Length: 102
Image (cartoon, rainbow, N blue to C red):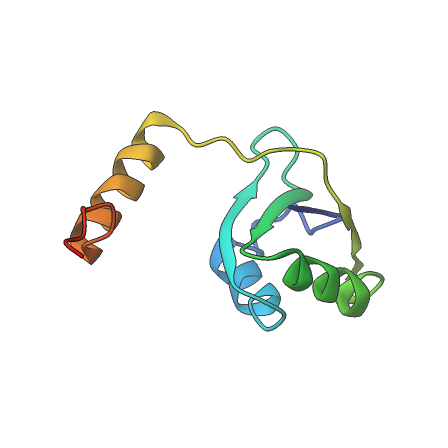
């Protein structure tokens, strides 16, 4: 998980924008723009390599005129109950989580 600080707070940056930018460096699992501090987002990658590449290449870069501060985060992205239900439904639709007959 990485922390992205100094995002524009005017609503121009949405989770899908961040997904497109950060997804170039690895598989993004989840993005959470902080409700109480919209200038900060947490981005969870599937692997540490993706997170490290994003930090290496995007830290100090600009997004809508704001210089990004990107660092590893100790925060854990916790899912709301609705997000958990949606994730479980997506797994069921993909056939994941079912037993296999070997």
